[in-house]
Length: 160
Image (cartoon, rainbow, N blue to C red; front, side, top):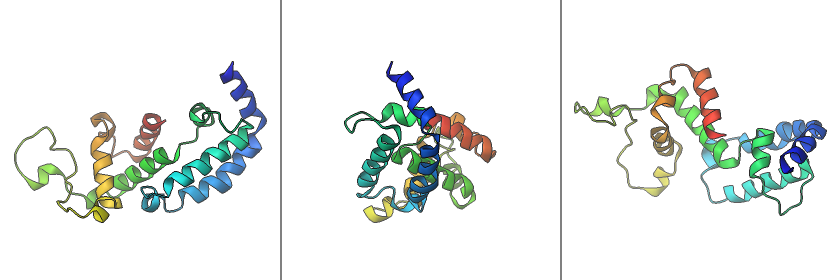
């Protein structure tokens, strides 16, 4: 019953949904790979949930988990991961692969090689975090890296 209610609310609010994507989503996406890992991202996520609840006219205590799926909107963390992995995919030639750094045939030879730096500020940066997240993706998904359109499509399915 809740799913049919949500679907009826979605049909009724397509103009509000287009307003979300034109205003709120564009603001969230601006530079997300740089600030998506910061401490203030939790506040932005709360505002994103509030906007979704307003669009669908749902009570403020209702969970947004189903609403994100029904509206095909990525939560902030998923959008951050998508943007970061697409950054890595577009600039894959700027990264070192483990097999390039040593000749030993290991199971992680296809992973990206993370630089050995201990500074937390660097480890929270785009380059290092992008490598960590990319290495956590399934190998089937990483195999599509050469076809950017198919890679993005499968990555969205994986994250949603």
